[in-house]
Length: 171
Image (cartoon, rainbow, N blue to C red):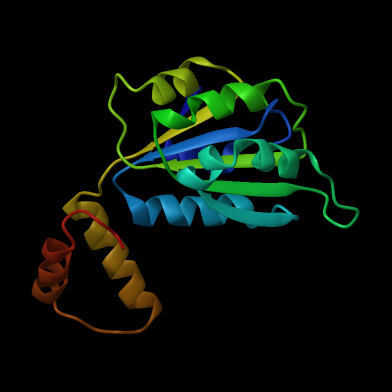
C-alpha cells in the first residue's frame, strides 16, 4: 500500500498484520524525521540493524524477533540500507506471528522495477512511503521557520544562498 510521507502520522500500526514499513528515497533528512516522529509514541525496545547484518545472520535474527521480553511490550526494528536482497527475509517473517513488532526498512532510491518496492506497493499488509528531494521553496520555508523559532535574523539573499547550497537535502 502506497502512502504519502505527510500521511505517515495517520498510520494505525495496530491494524497492519505484520507492521512492515518501507521508506525509500533520496531525502534522508525527511526520512529520519518521519521515523523519529513515527516511533516517538511507541513504547518498547528500538533496535537498529544494517541489511548485511540481517542477511548474514538470518536464523539468529529471526530467533531474536520471536523472543519476548517480560518488560517491553513492543519491539521496533529499523533496518537501514535495504535492497532487493532482503526479500527472502521478508517472505520468511511473513509467515511468523509478529503482532507486537514494528519493522521499518530504510532504503535509498529504489527503481520502479525493484522487487522490494513493487511487493510493498501491491501488498495491503505492507506500507510503502517514498521520500523525494525537497525543492527550493520547501527548503526556504523550513529555513525561514527555523530562523524564526531560534530568533535569528538573516537577509533573504543569505537564506537563498543557504538553500541553494543544500542541493535538495534538508540535512
